[in-house]
Length: 265
Length: 373
Image 1 (cartoon, rainbow over the protein chains, first blue to last red):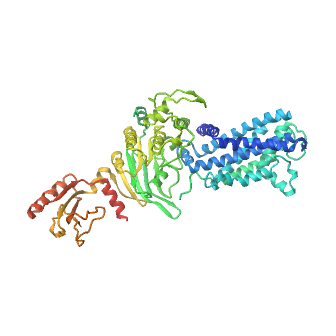
Image 2 (image 1 turned 60 degrees about the vertical axis):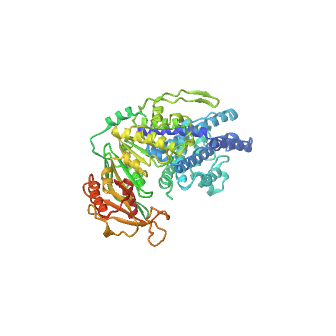
């Protein structure tokens, strides 16, 4: 167990080194969501959304985008490329266990996400004067989101024949994440049943937990009333439950679809 | 080229087990295709065992089952007395694997790759103590600070002759250089068992010799090695025992001496003209010769043997080959020459291009592969 943790940390550091050396990944994974955040805040103007300024609403929703880029796309790419280049096979034949290899990638992605969120926090403070109200809730949302989307990435890499195709196989998930989650607009904009479906998708609970954690107000329903810390945790319980179910589902998908080696001829 | 530290560690780690690798009735199936069809062999501690065979013979599949990449379809497999799949956690730190190809992160430098592997090995409780390499100091460049390279990493690179490539990106290495880096990674943690899948493919002759020396030093230090190769001289030089695989089965196995001796000694010569028949020639050591007619421009008698194209301009001749497989492997060739010479004297025939040679591994290999075709 201790060995697995040490291995995972070492592999996560390796991932960060490699991301830093790859300009394409740096742009796609790190810069793009921040650019989109800037565009969305511009589009919202100064109007109020769900009881908060538009800028604050969007910026607290952007971690949902980052889950798509820094975690999901990044990991589908890296799992697929490393499988085809036999890196995964070599790692598994070396010292780290399968669990440590997966955990390492997840940990690296979590570090990227938290780094971006720190930038976002500064941005939010500078423009909206908001300080995060409930950091543990934000961190829990990040961890749950990374687990689900890392597992989903593992599953999707199994469906992706090579690294070039990864750009295409990630699209359906990305579209759903962009359109079906309350990143730039609240859920009640979506017509009845779509809103319910969106609430059950894995990105919505994360965004709602993040937004509540940042703003200290109830953003699970569309109310936006201020909540005590305990109230925030209680309100977050259904979201945590949905994420737990998704961890189970994506875990099974990953187990079923993920491959360590390229297919034989 | 030095491995004293490696040697001490391997020696100390050895337990009491005699057979380090045990394979019994192994079968491996991929869908409808059976890549390995019931093979058995054992590798004693401190020996190099070579698996020879053509492409697709099942060598790599056998390796991958032993390395724990996939469970056996049928049969038993043990490495250091452990199940390679179910007891992978216990086994992994004690085993070194050199895959047939690839698996490097191209954006890392050679030294960073070794550092990564060294770190992973240390995390698993097997610190790397190779030393001897002269440390490379860190330095400042326009792009930022380049990290130094420590002694252990340089020692590993020196072992395989890559010390001058420490700061080169892995993607810029040649195929043979990648194989050498691969070897450095496989031996880094002083494994008790080493799996080498075609270790010298793509290497230049000098690198191949360096690699052989590394493997020999490890073997002498008590590491057990399972090796696959296409190069027969590699197997002859390194292996104590070998097995020749073809289409998923082991056809010949034993010590190199045994296998080569079983291939028989050859006596070959030419007789002028093409009128010779079996009846004309003596039986030596209980063996009749194989006659091949060749040469001559008339076309009637020209029957060139496969693999020995006769020049059409030469005079017709008969190629005679005896393959002696008598029990006395040491003196059978000598014993056969006396009656042969007596026969030649009696006939007044000259044995042209007379050659006597021991069988080679290649003879055995070609027979195994040829029998099946």
